[in-house]
Image (cartoon, rainbow over all chains, first blue to last red; front, top):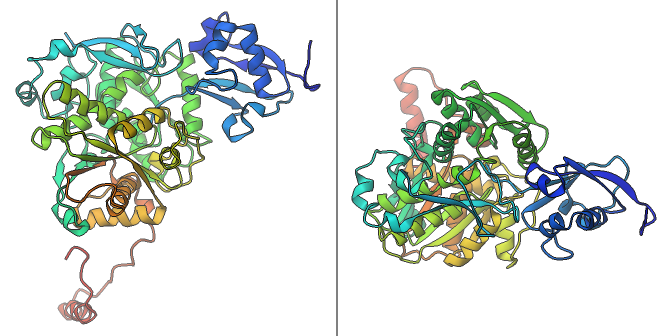
Length: 99
Length: 419
């Protein structure tokens, strides 16, 4: 497996129901990378239709998507540059209203 | 029959059938109910509305229900108080309080959205309703479910005020406390909605639920005598109500029911959770989420799902925003109570405090009609007032002691607050 960072980690990324049809109805998808951005980038490469919706631009996520690493919004971490390690849990969750 | 046209992706413009739906499949943005306004013209009139029930269902033609309402028969139609004493105190000409602390049955604006959501839950054939909540929504879902005979499961942050826990448990729902803040609860709820076939009102019934919030705006306009206030100050948490009041105003303008006076919308947030106001102040298109730290727990939502639209509507309307610190929030609760006899929760104190700041800074002119939207009741959050009052004097049950007390108070020029 190719690895640009030298510390590639393989994680199962949790996909919410609404987005599953675009990844062959899988609940999660395994991808490898050293950071959140690398993992999502791999996801985008593997599933271009899904990737086109996940990202607003090449480097910026769709604003209606929240990404959580171990239950923490990545915007409170290092965003797409947040490093990942074995055993981490990465989830993609659409923004939800309420109160 | 209804005037509902479709569910439409707010960003994509894609139309979907009327079905439980959380987001638009194409861009994950929200979906919104659209109506056939042309068909309404000449049929949805001031007279047709005035002939309706004294509840939010008088606006049924502008709500996304197909059959008869199934819940909320006494929800909405809350007082619009002309707040003359407070207006005089603040030096403004015309001040109104839209008082949803008196909403029925659970004393917050949420009874509006839940009335619509529960009716839709019946129409879609669900037997369980649920929600992620900072308290008020859970109260409302639990109360409406009890009276409509549906099962309820409500998810709340683990550290809610004790009174708020009682206020939901008494209706008998399944209550689950989640170890995290509201945003954590909400995230879990969207995953729960994925797995269980439940009507989570703020998730898969969200497009219908949010429409109920329009009735707060409809009522303001009708109760002002079919006019719009020039300035409307609204609390911002998840970002549902401000865009929906704006939509209500625009719908009434479009239908010719009120004159377009270019109403301006203002967002109120607690200083300890103010992503939207920060974006306004820094002139940013997008807001950055925050970790809430405020006594105004019912509006402590750091990652507002509809925040983008709040920003859009505020800017489009020429309004602005303000945030209030915890001491300012408590002072504003007392000010509103002492001048108008309305006891609101810290969210309402936030809105009142922010309205005062916007008036004092000149953002809101003193000589134009202002409406402050109060969305919750202070009796639910008594803990927030802990330490605010000195212990009242206790005396023997004798006239001589009472007379002495009054004489001492008079000598010290101590008068009750309202005089």
